[in-house]
Length: 568
Image (tube, rainbow, N blue to C red; front, top):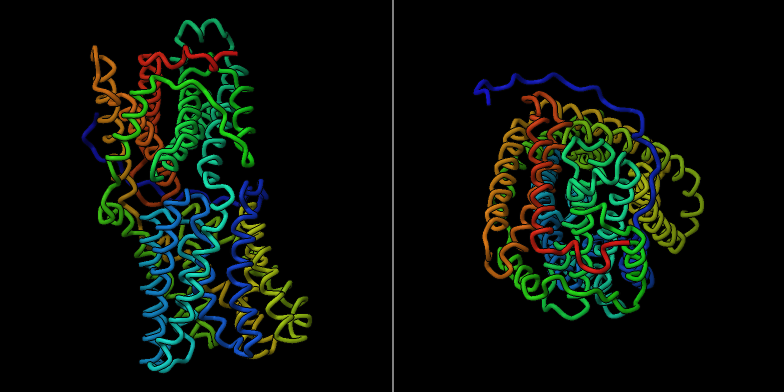
């Protein structure tokens, strides 16, 4: 390999085609939609009955925590939601104390930008999204520009904490009816993704007998479509293992789910020997509350020990995960601060809207940030028109105002998984209506401020993303490549061993799969970044192919692909 460092590559073309394309909704879109309506509705209707709707902004801080952690198993969700509520309370506390100590808009914007940067880094490091840091930034920035006295802060924080506790209960309530629901959904996704890869393999293999003689794994270069299907399957299987490993005691339903995920792994390793219809049938059976499909365990003792070894491995320390995110945090801080200051210079009365718009843009790379910016602007502009249509109805009275906000809460979560701009159409009027909890305002002024802040936040925020380069993206690829190679070599040594330790090959196989998923995500993120050295595409593809071949060999080494249920 050459020791000469590749030269930085120029800016890539920014995409427009497909940015606004409407996709399929999330399979659980209704869960956050219904949860947020219940979590927001009960406190707001209570305040309405008490005649104190002016306090709704503080309860909203806790209520909106119900949007998080719907993909996590309930044991992990309990911890994650608790941390979300505590994080929200900490951000609101900083904002309210700052607001009580100063009325300087310059200082308030600076504090808001720093909070947004910290929220971006922590949410990305913990992978708590969706909705990620945007909700935190929205609440904390609005709190900064709400007049306070120091004596009012404890009471307002108590309201937020009470609503946060209610949101925690709302988020955990479905577990009473379907205690293994998240794990079942994750397993079903893995089975369906593996079935899709197996179907594509059969359809696109020109010579099935040649594929069989190659031990069900092609040695030539797979087509791009097959590569994407394999990567999607590997990611789904990895997500399913993450879901299962995040749980507490391994009950029999969870053990059955683990065996189904193993079948998905087998399908990825030996697609020519797989019956996709059987995988899809198992996935369908996981819907609802019926029993988990029973399949024979694959080397049961080793599989059991492999899962325990994986659980004992733990996660990387938070500090290690925060380090690579520094450029994104700097982008967020700079972009939010500049957006707020430009909005102030233009005389807009609510500069935090521009700050939040900038905060909402920042994705894994500049290309994705650009796409999010286009979606945000289009969604907000259409949302302003929707607000103009709804404002007369909302102004009929406080009850109408609350009900309109709840409807937009539901609509935002119902649409946002299809495309971000569709969700923004509902988020925008909801944000405008929330400002009227303290009293009705002139719609024309609100609409003008929102349009100006949206355009300012998007333009300034994207400019900051271009200005702050992410040179670490290339370093992360090198690190990911090294991790894959170490994991592959370790797995290969266990394959060659006559008698590997109990559970060691299972655990090694899953760690190699996780490393391959991380490599793909890192390469995709770096591919959309500007002003960095060229992505080593060939090395990444070679590492992926050899890594997946090693995974397939590990499956054959254990004899899993010969088990009943993997063939038609």
